Length: 626
Ligand code: ADP
Image 1 (cartoon, rainbow, N blue to C red):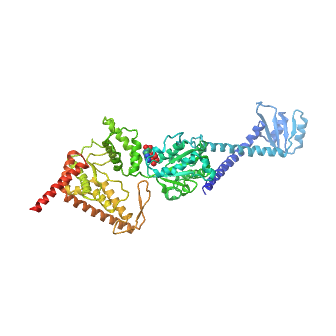
Image 2 (cartoon, protein in one colour):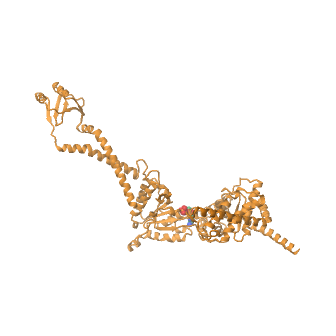
Image 3 (cartoon, rainbow, N blue to C red):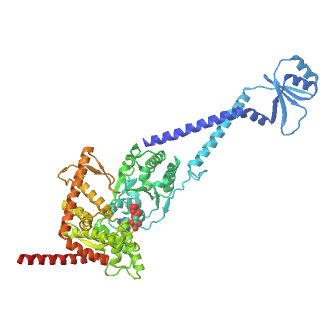
């Protein structure tokens, strides 16, 4: 089907060219035939009357006369220019008197044209066929120039950035974690090393592998590692580099890329963000001629090249669901390799790989950092190590310590500290109570994650304060109780504002958004509500990007879903308020301490809480004794 599309395109173009040539040729022939003819015979010729002809003969002005069946051509004696002869013509009339007149004048050479069919054929070729062929060739040349390399207008020129690395220098050791993905690409490496081993048996090798995963998980790195391990050149290009304003340019770039790659086989072609060209051709995601042509060309090239030569295409995407089905069928990108966010072990390995060349002191405990960075991808972790090293240099230390690392975890999560933003006293109090509200709930609820740090120093990413929680261990499952604890913790900030200041601030917007999302997921996807039980109401659509979900229930059910979410949020908010009200002493004490210090550790926080609770318990015991 795809091939047919391509052929149709080609045919369409040729018919177009044919029509242009035909029209131009006809116009030229019409206007130019007389001119052309006279040029060929070296004559400029004009028509005169028969009377004028006789007059000229009588005046002895004529040198030659040539009769043909339809006309009489007259060459006058007087010629102004040697190169271009002047001649006249007039219609043929059978007139014996003129014949006599001519015969009587020996100066005039009279001849009759021999009319053969051949000259008619020559005339036809010269007048009609030759211009046609010339224009055809000219247009063909222009078309080739425009679509091929080195375009006349620079349009078809493959100026897309094809990066060719002869040796990537990356090996599997540089790719931390991702063991399953590495396992899947190992045989590709083996094939590139030794294609004969596979082809001898008759095994066909995969032409393409699609690396799927969230941004920054190391897809590009893995593709480079495959090239590095196999010791073959690496061509890389981004999907968006193909697509331009002009229809057909992308297709020519694809051709160019494959041509270049085949010359350097064995090699790897890596197309990043392939969804830019590989989007499904149905109208759901919006059609685009240029993109579709580029995709068709890519499909055709993938079918056309011989994989036994060792050209392997790897592509990366984080939106596999939008890709065209034709791209994923066997014989094209039939291998799908998932490169997902790293787990605790993966994160630890990634931190190790990136800290290999960074000087670190004894305080550094990468396990703790790995634990604190759940959800971070490889590029975040690389960034964390680098930020920590920069911070150490700024503080004029010679090695990175654990504090630097934690600081940079925060920088990556919440942005840099904004020391120049001075909060007013009242605002500072509000932020402090808000943060302590979150923190206090974590220690009052059984299933919440422990607090690592509380700060009211504003950060560049918009937050005025920040409570950092670190889980005790990596978790893959979350229980209902843990999710509820999470929502109550998130709502704790607003609850504290209401209890202490009897007002609400804009600082809780992000908390509210996140709490609503969790509650909604619990109802619509996790079957954790009484109202809907195990009914699934939403499905996640793009799992590797923002995890956006789409409803698959009726509007009526959707409004009931909203009501249920609202009811849950109200219930958990009340819970947060009652927990904080019962522990208002703790709230006050920690908040005061935080206002004074601006940043406190989880340990300091727990000490104050335990102290207050201890005195509370003593008082209660005393009261009981009384
Ligand atoms: P993607 O192509 O998935 O968006 P990249 O491969 O471009 O991500 O990764 C960006 C950077 O993140 C890499 O250059 C590397 O420094 C780091 N990185 C990502 N994943 C890993 C990993 N598994 N091991 C080591 N470094 C990684």
